[in-house]
Image (spheres, rainbow, N blue to C red):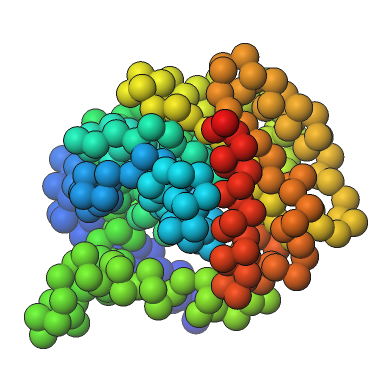
Length: 341
């Protein structure tokens, strides 16, 4: 072996060992194997709950950035009920369920309806958008009492070899905590140093700066396409096999327990307006999903069948262009009103 390669290998081993020792010290690890993480950090963001209590909406609409075009005033006027829209970029069913549990459920005001707008198999793929940067966002609305969500969304997807590695390598076991602390430090160090803003103001500023409109459209769409391949695997298209191990039954159960009427609506996106081929198994999946909602007594509509949402209204495959937001809000609201009548 070349001496330089051998030396590089030694340096890497030393660095790896030192990094693990630092993790052991920082997180006060005292025994091996390391116990598997079973829940989230206890800190819980509460400002969403406070918004619900302050604004007292009759309808809450929940989804990812694909619903950011919705104009609350237009929707409220069309359906005749005060509406609050929560559009959370980079979220999926795990985040939405935690939001229902820890924001809506714990708020002192309860809406009459809660509408979830989703794409295709998102409701039955609990591991969608929960790793890496998505885990950091997930923890905003989670606390240490959400062990069941952690088990289903995080631990359920770990391969056996990864579970073994997590048990004996501190750097791997605490990777999410390390990532969270690094992001927290990177975002807050300079503002805190000069007392520029509090953590909540910093979070809101980052959401504004890095929202979809600020990112190159082609790069953004490519990123979304790469992420969404998870939703169309043969395993994800098997509704019957996945629904019991998803957050969908819990969403419906908890909302009904709160006397809130659940509504689910499949989003329309640009490929629905073209001749793009449907993913294999998707039509059968959607038939099974619709039948499931029918048996559960839950309102459901499919916006992909709405002809007034045209190709020219989309900025990319998933997002309505800001210039078409008001028109699209009117059309979407009319579909919501039709469901409620």
